[in-house]
Amino acid sequence: MYRIIAALQLNRTRVQILIGFLLVMVVVLSVAGGLVYRSISDLLIRNAESYVGETAKQASARLDAVIAQVDSISLQLVTDARIQQLLYKAKTGEALSIDQKLSVRPILNNLMALSWLIQGIELYAGDEPLYPLENQNISERIGLETATFANIKEGQLVWAETQRKESGHLFAVRQIRLEDDYLGRGGYAVFRVTDSLLDFFNTEFPAVKGSTMHLFDRHHQLVASSSPTLLASVNSTWLTSENLQGPHSIIQIEGIDYLKIIRQSTETNWSILMLVPLDTITEGLLVLKQALLWALVVGAVLCLLLLWILSSIITKPIRRLRNKMRIPVFALPQQNDEVYFNFEMNELNISYNNLVRELHQLVKTVYEKERLNNQAEIKMLQAQIHPHFLFNTLESLYWTLIEKQEEEGAQIVIALSKLFRYTIQAGGSDDWVSLNAEIDHCQRYMEIMKYRIGPRLHWQFDINPTTHDVKLPKLLIQPLVENAIQHGIEPKVGASSLLVSIRDVEMDGNSVLSIQVKDDGVGMDQEALATLKRRLEVHNQPDTASSSSGMGLLNVQRRIKLYYGDAYGIHIESSPDLGTILDLYLPYGVERNV
Image 1 (cartoon, rainbow, N blue to C red):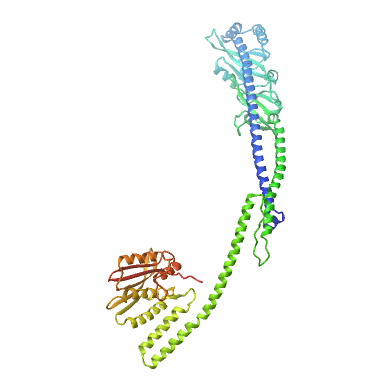
Image 2 (tube, rainbow, N blue to C red):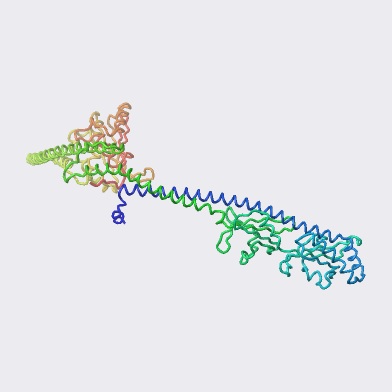
């Protein structure tokens, strides 16, 4: 992957700047252009929806007026006195002659002349035909459902929506109530109405280009349409539903999107559906789309030119500085005195020059340290002669005392020799030793101190056997013992005792090693004790009161903090004439490797 990036130079600063800015610009312009295009498209659709909706509202009102005209003519017919008289005679059982039945023809023709909608009128006495003479009964003619509904409406105009056997006509029925029979049911008047109810749409209302109007009854059956072939393959129930998908009601017919507007007729509860092609509404957006695309292209070209200039201002000084920083092997980098036009590049160059100066100074310092270390190593090799000379001298002194049969003095010399060997020789791993070796060293030190102090010194070691193999830094316990003898036991008049106790104890839920050095010497007053505690707390200060071995209390405290952390250290308690207690707690399993 990295090879491909390198081959395409995508790891170059200039290329990354160009690609990054270009992507940002394309994304911003695309998102902004998309939002603008969508907003304007939505605005055009809303305006068209409002305009077409108002047209559909006016068409619905016009349809209601046309239907109201049929209702008025039908009311005029059913209240005609001659019709009332004939139907009353038929209801009372009087047989009507053919002349009497044909006498209603002029009345019906006069009423049909009042409206172009009514193509024919039929009369029924009860359920049987009155005019025309040869006709079906009322239930067969308009359907049982419509007849029943007309009876329920009791004289109101009812549209036979599902019974359109004659092409090009609709049927409306009205029950005739007889005034002489206390408004009892006398028969029916059936009106054949042309289905060209929407012919007025194209002549009386301005419409959007390509829009069509369709009329559905309350059973979702198509009653009239300005373009019936458009809906030939579409479910009428789905067309008249008002379910919205998104902010607008948009449907697709034969691959073309249409804006759907539905209004209800208050007279018949029929639905007027208007369909407007979306392409007609948004055809003006084509210019906007082209303008946005051209803006994107022109903006991309200008952005590339400007970014090329900008990247050159940045990358050229970087290349010059990079060439300056390329140095031969085993050579030190040199300062760059060039001043750049770019402020940030000047700041970077200043930082580079500071780094070069510090590097030169560091190399000089390291060289000086190496020189001093080499001198110190030579001196250390020379100083190794002195311990060997000391050990040889102590060996000669030991055999001299043996020849003189001074056994006590000889044992002291041997103890002193072992003490020096333990102190001088390195044990490896930062001089970590076992607890048993450290106790042996303390024993030898006590033997020498007994020879010096005499019988008034008594000591005891109380050590848990399980702790003998515990590792700890060398010369950690002996300085505590030495401090107790020098500052507590030696100044005291009379016999004194020293107890070194080592145990396993629990501290904060963990098992730790407890080392306690307790003496009954002269002790310290509270002021001296407080001073010593403060010095132990500031363990990074030099120990000006260290013993002759160079391992005073502060030295031990510093080593403990270094190896085990600040949570561990020396705790001291003392009282005048009662002695001093030094407590030291160390964790198990801690040994710093070199």
